[in-house]
Amino acid sequence: MSGRFVRASKYRHVFGKPTRKEFCYDNLRISRNAWDTNLVKVNPEYISVNWEASGGGAFAVIPLGERGKLPEILPLFRGHTAAVLDTDWNPFNDRLIASASEDGKVMLWEVPQGFTLYTDAEEPTDVSPVSKLTGHSRKVGQVVFNPAAENILASASGDFTIKIWDVGTGSSSLTLKHPDIVQSLSWNASGSMLVTTSRDKKIRVWDVRQERPAHEGTGHEGAKNSRTVWLGDLNRFVTTGFTRMSERQFALWEPGNTTPIGGFTTLDSISGVCMPFWDDGCNCLYLAGKGDGNIRYFEYQNDKFEFLSEHKSLEPQRGIAFVPKRGINVHENEVMRAYKTVNDSYIEPISFTVPRRAETFQSDIYPPTTGLKPGVSASEWFSGKSGLPPKIDFESIYEGNEPVEVSPDYRPPTAAPAASAPVSKPAPKPDPEPIPAAAPTMKDQNRSIAAIASKYDDKDEGDDDETSSFEEVSKPSQRSAMPVKSEPSPTKTTSAPAPAPAPKVAPAIKSPTHAPTPSVVASGSAPAGNSTNGPKVESTLEQIKELLETQTKMISVQGKQIVHLTDEVDSLKKRVGSGSQDQSDRIRQLELELEELKS
Image (cartoon, rainbow, N blue to C red; front, side, top):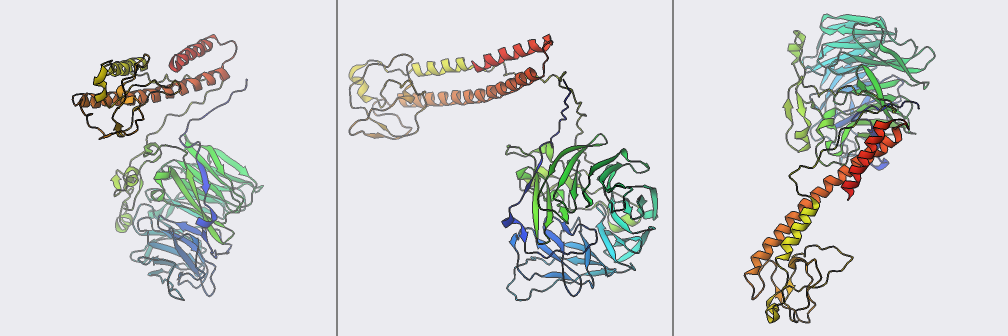
């Protein structure tokens, strides 16, 4: 028998759920510029889109809540004299955005308060920049904000440099010089290091404030573009690129090593570069193909990427962005959400969800995430200080309260490496939790209910029965006894009938006689002429109700045990070989336990 291996993971069944067309962002004119960027960026409030504009460069900002077909004329963010190539949102201010353009300038913009695409004006007013950063001599292809320090921005240009800006003062005192065009760049979590890929096929890890590379090595051998992303606060980063035969591949690196950990992993032969995105909370890597509709995702564990699944679509994406973790929907068990461009005309959200039915907060899949407070200020960062930004607790967001901050060095509990076991020798499963010994059995509770009911069995008392509001009738054989709802009880007008066969039925579950003209007795009050029995009946009903509730809970627990044992029996039957006596005995033992529970 060939061995099969199963790896335990909370994210094994994560799936991507696309959004229906009517809830997408339609009627867009997305830029057709050939420069290799993501075209869109997103935060929990807005999407920015590189726009196909005439008479200079522009980009659009779309509030996330304004879905559907957008107006023909939108208020654009205009100010560049050439096409906008990239944008990036400030991680600590959802209304501040930076843009890079072919005109060689970097501009800062602030989204107006209450910004909307729907106005009564025939010509909506365009938004102007609040600051212009000049210093590059050629086009600026990428802009990326520092993820830990306030107002620190990196911009990569065709003049072979990366400039580090303090956007608060508009100055740039740090420059990282490359021998060729920078294709991609990414900060580490503390904002002290920067990794870049270049057209010269080199990967460089920069000690930014020293303006020198701390490490330099050879990356992907293919002639096409490569991308990189740092794995949060881990001392690792990932690159995507091509082989010499133009096959797509990705690799995991440790700064200081010249070879990737585990070598290069080949994906396929599609021509578009893979755009990498890192989910720091779930330790998952998403690879979105440029020019195809596939999004693969992997879980990082023990310096390896374990393939989880792949979201496939017939609609290819030229650009894609993932929302920051604090912007996901925790009530829907969403772990990530992507926004991809389709046909350069609309943007489609894709929700990546853990399929669970529980309606409570799922703390195991939502460790704390970075909030809106920076770790250090711009002046502290330039002086050499580094620090992780504080994190926020997802449970406070789930309950609708203000985000609660937690320690910035919080790390989710690391699960023990899942030892993959072959089918021929399955790892034993833990026994199900037993029911506490003190809990009464179902038979005991049935006897208790019968004993309570027997206290109120109707006796042959002649004319005295006429004062009772209950009448004993034969119980239908096909129905089980259930408590009577709080309804008016008719006063009995006929003579006392013969008692029903044993077991007797409690007065609370007897059916009233359909008298021609019954007199109504108020619900919960004692019947006329028998006022002393009223409290006793109510007390009896409460006891029966409590016992029934306990029975329901026990049935639920036993049902779960039956399912657990059934699954274990089926699993062992499939796996056990004919010569394994110990496991055959285990199956027989489980079957006996299962039969006992079912009885």
